[in-house]
Image (cartoon, rainbow, N blue to C red; front, side, top):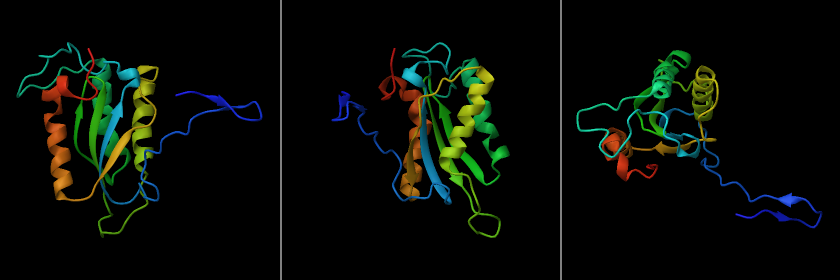
Length: 172
């Protein structure tokens, strides 16, 4: 990726890739699968990370930062009553969440925060608790559109800690 000077002598930077679905309302009721990464893929959320650091039926040993992230995730529904974290896992250098934005008790769409607002607030709270940011800018998301997509996301989150060394974010 190279920066170039335009005819006015100003540096032009490459266009940033759009990561959100254009025209989609990310405050609308629905289900979302999100991945939030640690800056530079630094391993800060687990203690004793290695190829054999987790075995079936074991939970990873969260680090001090991982415990703060766990608390933040579990507090999201307290700040946003119509938001449910259906499933999540904290990996050594990233977090996976399944988030539901729900309608009100009468089935009407409520004025919900956007997905970016929810994730941004969580990241800011963690940063405040730690004293500095550990996060990569933005996050990845996928809209869960049907039962099959839901089951695939659930399975991925459920099995991801067991497959850490095969994970796309794995690094020694």
